[in-house]
Length: 451
Image 1 (spheres, rainbow, N blue to C red):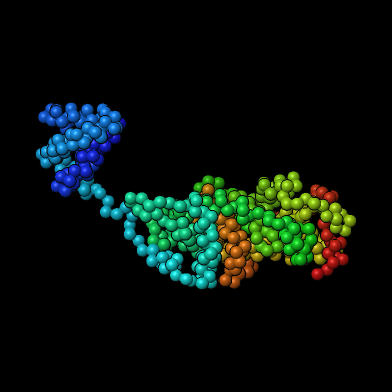
Image 2: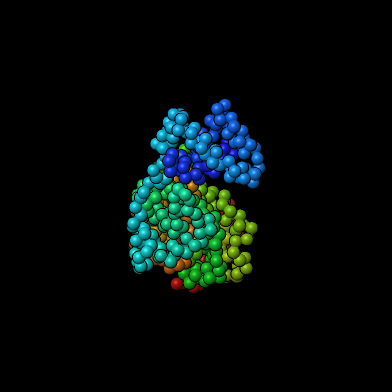
């Protein structure tokens, strides 16, 4: 408390032109001089005045400062001029004062990009989205990311923060390259990237990753040849750095560390549900059973549950998956070993309609190249970054920002390893009779209604 009072006295005394111009004192030096006055007998009269000022109320303190200002200023000046210790302290503080609160950096490229009238094709090639889409995201995040100028530095605009994050996701450049490109510090680039990803998840996840209009989704799959379908489900592994703990559980069948993204997509390859965080060694069926989506479908709270009669069998809307998933009344998977032409036709129809989820993963990884390489973020942030890429993917698809680069087909080795993954046992002895009846009804429907 006494230090705060001394600071108030020093701030008032420092307004004197004599101290500012002749001695160039800062507040800390004046505080040292006042403290020395309080300790010396030589200045007992001035010390008494100062103690009287320090013990008074705020309003009384200011009145006493105005009354005794000239006397105190003269004593402080005399103490400073006759004290080598204060001179030495002043020189040390002058040497330790910062010349810059932040290193001057060049952000000419970004300033030119934001001020010029570049076409959408240029923005999509650089940021994977048009200028209007990027500004839409910035406006959605502005309440959380807006900062003010301080006495040490100017704030970084929200548009620049969002652009830095999207650039990092789209190109997987190092933080050093991002900092040089946008004219910020490396540590600032890292903290901004993490902050923006977390805000995108907290503010845009619920309104972007959702089912939308169920009837429109089911109409889309009906046009593809699979009626009464709410989506296609699959999982993909994302390469990550070696985790500090339980690293063995993250090694996949290819021998590198990865984390699984489970996603449900609609007929337009938009994500309607995601679940990320499980290590790659976990089986797809286990990930499904541990996801909130499984409980939602079992409880009948995901999407409409209006029964539909197909070939005499009443059923609620279903989703489709590959052979790695279990057969449920709401989840259709292909026959492990088709024995009839109708079963073969069912497998072909299901594989054709499942192409939308394969395309969604291909576009996701082509648009955000950070998912093609090892994510260089800490373990707790990996699910946040992956979910951020899914959110931005949906926003780009909704806004119509198509990917300019051609999609790469998966390499042969990857498809071979995918088929070599552990699958659900081929025996269907434990499958429910209800699920088998629904799949048989689809077989009969596809046989009567070929494409």
